[in-house]
Image 1: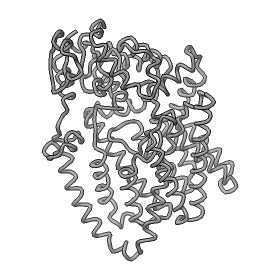
Image 2: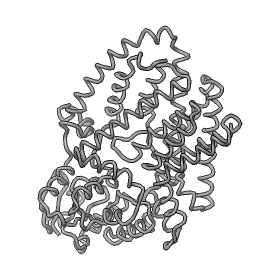
Image 3: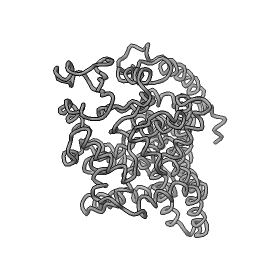
Image 4: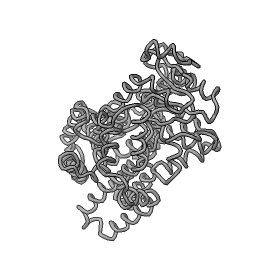
Length: 514
């Protein structure tokens, strides 16, 4: 089928806009706290002179290098906000388009492809394990890696194994675990049909992957597995897996809801694979089997046998791709069972007209969310005319009215300070560098500045524990050598509020002079 003859581009733009309506668009917040401050520093070297995270980042090569370099290059021309927004929408649209293409490659119809491209990043976006969503509301490293990984799967299904390896290798430059996991699946698939593929082709694919992933993969392998260790491995794993990211690393800490949703989609996907051609069905069954077996090995090895090296694989991220193939199988099956070819052919014109209407409505909402009378909409889309949060207004005031070298102590639930205020923090909860020295220093600073013991953090709820400690020890925060402290008024005692020096207030947020 020639997709250029089916008016596919207008429906795909409409789907992309609906995805943004559903998940939102956020800038300078959440995971971007360890993505964008480095860009701001490169653009304005005077920033973050005393910031812990930013200064540690520039001491050595790390996993954000290619993301930061890409955004920096664009930002030199059109600014950070325009660069990040443009790249986000390009990557999101590419993801939608490639899901559509992959669905058709697996035997689906035009409507099945559109349906999968719509449902996967919306309704089924969180049907994965380890809180690894299919798409995100902000532009992060995984936003670039996702379409590259889907393209790797597409090329593999199309028997273009070297192209698949190159795509997975490029994904590694931005999200190394995603690229490695996908290539591992594809490699096992090639080995299972080595008579068809040929060992020479497999060898070329491996070389292509190593060539394109090497600039990121080789330094990471050295840092994680070969470099001399100066810290106890149990402590490092405790920090990363049990304190900072249990929702990514520790299966027993994953929400029960996640397991229920993932089990549903796996069973549904496996049950509907019969609607696919035999060769595709066998490929996907292999992917399911390898992925789920790997999860079992990860759980038993890491949690039960304490094999710490397994934590570095973060294998449960692979569930994203199992969910993707399940949704595709569901959409193919639904269209084959309920729709006829005649019906699908007769709907193309109406789909195009309806899509054009959706684009217009979506554009109005996305770029005028401040005028939409809904609390759920306010601030969800940081595009055009949108309502800023009280915390964002506080950060903006800090950026405009404090010295560039001022230092701050911020609570752990302030997840946009570095990006929005662009000032130095003694320590920040959100940004993380996957290097042992940083992780140990990060924990020590948390203990020092937040007045909390590390033993109290190993419960899967470290952020809340830190937040409680931040305010219960608030009178001691002034002993720290910083210029300002950020707090929420309703968490302060009357004495804390009146005995200190409020500098600026924005809603419930307050800036205090130390």
